[in-house]
Length: 79
Image 1 (cartoon, rainbow, N blue to C red):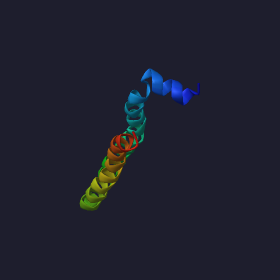
Image 2 (cartoon, helix red, strand yellow):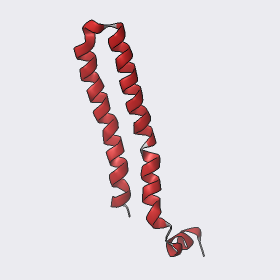
Image 3 (tube, helix red, strand yellow):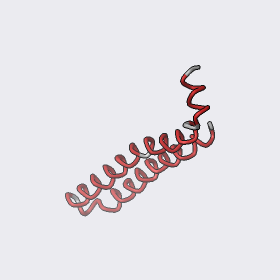
C-alpha cells in the first residue's frame, strides 16, 4: 500500500488543507510585517514623502494579502 493510499484511508488528507494554509500564511505574514516596518522607517526619515510612502505601503499590503487569500482558496480548489 502506497503512502498516498494509506493517508487517504486514515483520514489524514482532510487536515492537509489546513496545514497547507498555515504554511502558506507564513510568507505573507512576514511580507506584511516587512512592508509596514520599512514604511514606518521611511516615513520617520522623510516625513515630506509620507503620501507617496503610504500609497506604496497599502499597495504592498494588498499584494501580500492576495497571496494569503490564494493560500486559503487553493487547497479547497484542489481537494
